[in-house]
Amino acid sequence: MEWFWIALAIGLLVVEISTTQLVSVWLALSALIVSVLRLIFSGLGIGWQMLIFGILSLVLLALTRPLVKKILANRDEKQATNLELVIGKEAIVVEDINNIRGEGAVKINGLVWSARSVDGTQIPAETIVIFKEIDGNKAMVEKKGE
Image (cartoon, rainbow, N blue to C red; front, top):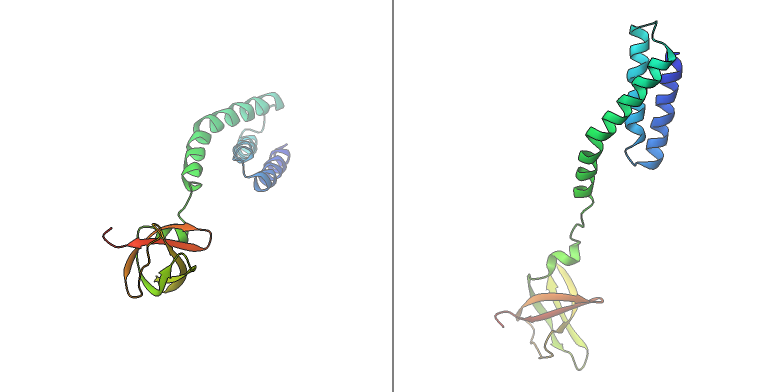
């Protein structure tokens, strides 16, 4: 009968791997514990095995699932992208910014971005600007200190 519990544990682990919902893993652990208990206590009847499996499964789920969900929720929080990390940083104008003509470029972190000024003012090359936001593929900037 212990082979049944081992097979059940393996089947539940396969289900867990395919779903990653952190439910089947506790059931699989319960099945493994019951198989060990069955080896230790050879006279353990099927009724007791099922009862132990059910209670163990419920206890493991109740005790561990909320903690695991909390840990996974923290892991899944939105991470800042490389683009979002440049907002608020200084950049240098490498091509005069003129919104009317649609010209301008800034360099930040070694990358050159097409740029426009936030307030529509012209900004000459070599000026230090602050990267305010991203609009499509354009850096929206303003002169430092404004």
